[in-house]
Image (cartoon, rainbow, N blue to C red; front, side, top):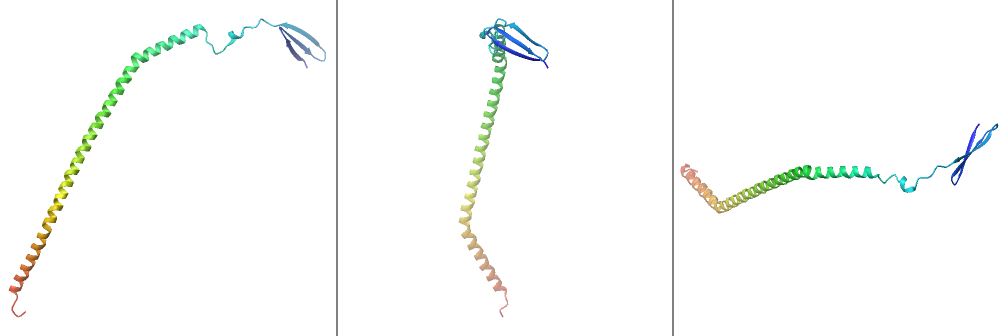
Length: 144
């Protein structure tokens, strides 16, 4: 079985092959390293940055001058409809309260009338009862 051992120091790599029949070594010179600031995966290139800013500017302009006015107009129409519905509900509530007050006034008037006439009804009923009994006694035969 062939086994490779790789060791590195500084600018060079050492590769050793170990086998029962073969032992060999190779030296590989390392390539020149790239500076750390060029290897940053987060920082965009200038070309990418310009395309991103341009796309953002176009989208912001479309939102500001096309979509936002339509959205604002719709929101104002909805708010006006809600205000109108609330005013109509308040008018209906006021009308209902006036009807309830009128009904309560009629009930109070009926109660006052019944209190004034309850004594009259009682005396009238008693008088009619007394008159009816007199008439009945008048027509009774005298033997009773």
